[in-house]
Length: 108
Image (cartoon, rainbow, N blue to C red; front, side, top):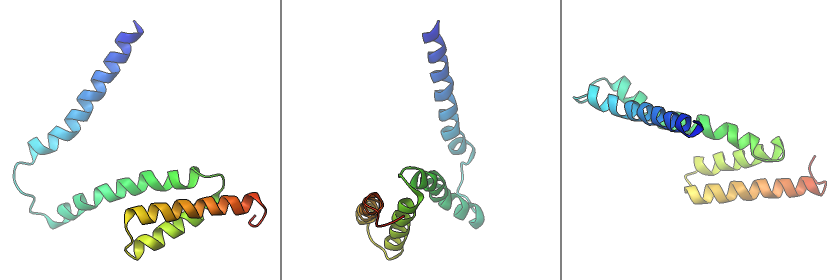
């Protein structure tokens, strides 16, 4: 009986996911003429990514100080146009060094 419940849940999730992706394509047949809606839809992926990423940044490390240091480094490097790999590696290195410094007592 339990397997039937799980399969029902998976089916419902599949239908909902499909409808969310299919309905906009079916309902919007022509080109969007509103510049406001175009710009709104352009920035939605960035807003969603930011909303998912920032809480994870501050809850994934041992302390808020190391998370804030990594975030500041990532934002600064991204602002100055560095690539994704550089930003990710430098911010991870900053978090690692901040955690190490706190473990030996250099930072509180």
